[in-house]
Length: 436
Image (cartoon, rainbow, N blue to C red; front, side, top):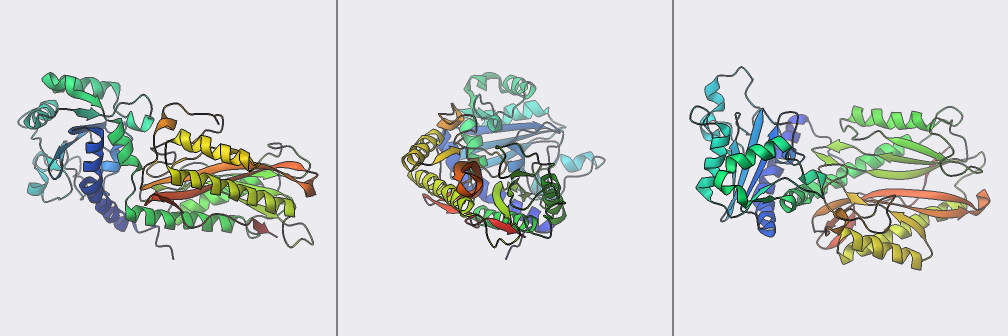
């Protein structure tokens, strides 16, 4: 049974627990892997670094003024420090008109708790001077900041913040290096409990798709694909798991070419419907595509050709999952899976991606819809354990009952790579939804 979405307070408590685990168990390993002694994350209100929200307590939704977080690797873990005008704790930040002294005290003094220790007293020094002092006291060899030519999610330091940070570093400026590996690693690594939650959230997405692809919502001769898409959009909002993109429902029809039936068209019996939807909860995202068939009068199931088309899509999923199990980079998986598909006589495109704290999340790109050869940069990034992906692909099959018309079967299913193996989140689609 799904327990999500949780009440908001319970969500904040869950996020706090996850943050503590991430800082205690994941971040030290990532900093060691990247060879970074100190990691500086700077964000200003309304211009947050993409990594920043992953480092905030559950009661915080954004930066306050300029918020600087400093992580220093020291045995046995990581010192988590805040050079910020407000205490970055688990309790709500003080109101703007709160007494100045409240936001100058360390967490222990303010009684607010949280993972970060305040290292700045504004009455004593400027924020940038406090950052310099904090770094100088620890004398790191390599200081990581979030700049990256390859990954947008690791390139969150604005030009102004980068310039000011380098100026503040002074004699330590030549020790500053890109922290791409730390930022991407932190964003992509999922805790065991997060993977369990992702199972529940994917199950909820599948539940909503099943509701949408039913006679209660799809009324042939009346509803359009756009109507169904907006029904899904509203349903997610009503459930408290808002979508992170506009849901879509498209139509394939006997006697038409791919893409010729607009989503504004009225759905008819005999149509093949396809949806693409994604929800958010506790800072996690889902990304799902499934398919449905609208029964004609007298039909009890879809044409055999459409059943086989879905089976071909499932075989392509199997071939791709087998390559995930072998590991390697995104490009390795892309090329091996496509070679396996060609060997099996399957016409397919593969364009899978990480999904987690963002919809199109941190980690390796595994093909693009417009690049089935090799994705420079992000495709060269390896698959690591304890990560989650949207297994996204499509296959093309002739359907005899439609005069051998070429039909596209697009599928997208959440998977987790854990323990060196792939597991489906909730379950994958192996039978078409039937409407009628």
